Amino acid sequence: MSHTPSLPYNRIAVLGAGSWGTALATVLARNGREVRLWARRPDLAERINLTRQNSDYLPEVDLPNGLTATADLAHALAGAEAVLMVTPSATLRPMCQAIASHLPAGIPIALACKGVERGSGYLLSEVVSEELPGHPVGAVSGPTFAHETALDHPTAATVAFPFAYQDRLTPESSPAVRLSMSLSGGGFRPYVSDDLVGVEVGGAVKNVIAIACGMMSGAGFAENTRAAFITRGTDEMKLLAQTLGGKRETVTGLSGAGDLTLTCSSTTSRNMSLGYQLGQGIARPSCFEGRPVVVEGEVNAASVTDLARRLGVSMPICETVNAVLHKGADLREAFTALWSRPIEAEPYALDLSIDHPSPDLPLQFGAV
Image (cartoon, rainbow, N blue to C red; front, side):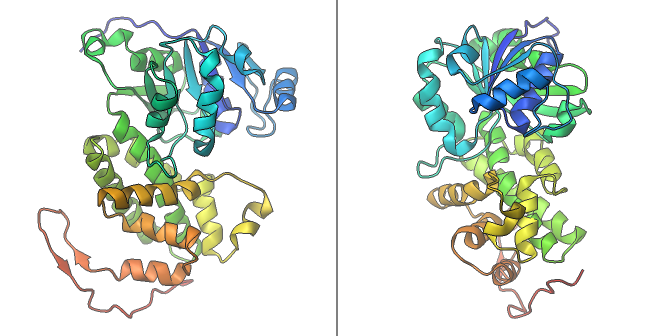
């Protein structure tokens, strides 16, 4: 095991001043890095610099010295040794196009957003590689609520980049290790991975599974149900990751099962919260008290299931969530049908499919 010192990146651009972007910028600046945090709205950037807080997205957290906010992309990227992209997945492609002229060749880009692009079926790293060729592309992912991370509660996450031959010879110089060293400090503990596909699939799918858990919790079910969805959801993540060339082992780690467990365990998660409100019978336009909250799992329910269909991967939980969110399916009927699917084996080596003995037995919604 190598213990050779690694040089962290000292000047880092963080693109996206929402809660998670601000939390990551806070971790980096607290560790002594020079951080420029790009905000889409000039008024937000100005208030962050003036008050040393991001009251819109991460209230009651004092931001450290070394963190400067700006609404000017050129200024945010000037001299940056690495870039963290924390914009919504749906806006990633135009964001890449916007920064292309400001980013020197070879600067590593790490994604801290999660998903699959609608239409193309691309993982987000593939979107970046297509729009910004010549840059190492990776991801930061794990069981991380922004507020806890910013307050320096002990937090672990995975930093993943593909490892070239030279990265394996001198791992301390690889983008994955250097960015890990930049983030490491206080309560934040990063782990390094070379399985970018596995990390990205875990991040995309776990949000959809969290909506499913929320739907069933909101409809009156409790711990047994959530544990079943977490476990079977992990299996859907493994199947998709493996089909795309990722490792099943990665999905059992921080960026897969770890992130899934956290997201499915608290309505602090916007995905879990959306599902919970829908499970209670609240109409989608009225969720979050009518505020236009971006919920990544809502977008990815469609893109993940579309990709799975193309690849011939069975993802019944994701299909059920997609049917409720985007195809007008009745929540109770959809989840009853999910539970009445043929009985299967665990593990898959025992290959069988047996018709459910009681297909017309309804689930007891609202029982708890």
